[in-house]
Image (cartoon, rainbow, N blue to C red; front, top):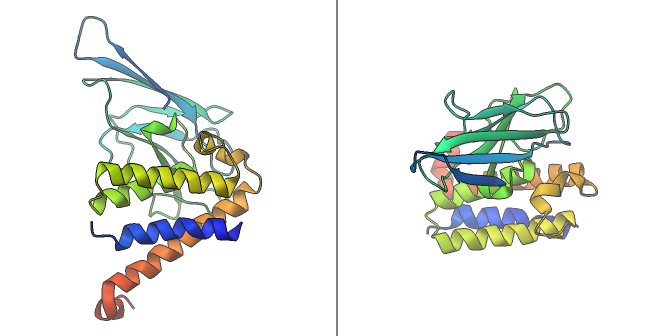
Length: 217
């Protein structure tokens, strides 16, 4: 199993070193430029989590702004969002956030604030928001920063899905939606996240060079 997990930070290393939903869209009545976008899904961390905020990050700034659609998850972690859009297929991220309680297992989080958890997902993940969708989202954002073409981005996403399915022993088509149901999900996800973080730290130090590394000390 460890050999399978090691493949994940290797993908991250390549990203750093390289130069180079469930939703329904319906036209809103009399206004041909208004489309109703609906998203339903589940927020999970250690398990599906109730009482946390989920939002559609329409401007993709990794924050739930006041004017963006937001909902509170129910007892089983589910949520529903609905809003109108001038385009039929708008771009957006899905986010969930909440204060970090004492004793919570440390998995991934987009937030740099140690007192809060923020996780996210691409809109293609059928409303699922969990640590695995967050790792995929962060890999894609890094690829965009590195100037990956659309074809390269899709190849990356396909490779990650295959790796994740192998690690967590779930069907590739369902790995993002059912990740928290995998055997040994928590210890595997903790190791998975730690390997990625450590790999990024090492790769960042190597790309900085000796003079920059000396400054950071």
